[in-house]
Image 1 (tube, rainbow, N blue to C red):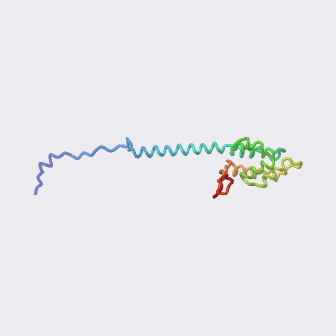
Image 2: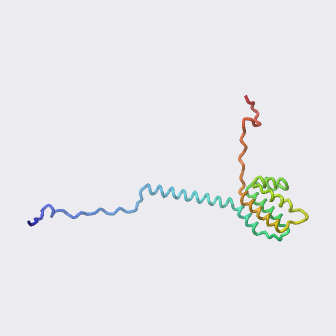
Image 3: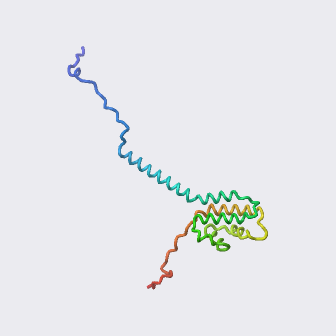
Length: 171
């Protein structure tokens, strides 16, 4: 049998594929994701920059401490000065600048309790200077105080309890 062509098939035209869908314009969902991502990136960048600026005094104090030479006769005085300048970078000057002696040591201990640091700083005006081992210990302890005590951790205000010093009578 011979196949006779169907006249209806002869009049059909070839199938044309639609044009390919392009990447632009992006759907609205992609724009939302892009905008949110940019906001997150800028917010994180701002927080990191703010933290970097906030800890600049800490980094500067550590740098000054590293530059000190142990053979300097004013080594312990300079360490104390570095600690005080670093603290004044985070706390109002009026609170720190006037502190000296026990008040200064108590304030240092309230931020980071390192008793031996207070003892070594206390001996800075003694007639016999600190020996090399004590100077190196002072440097290590000062570095530890700067790393752990800065930036200053402000303690929250104490909460009043029912038995506190309020003027109201308790019924």
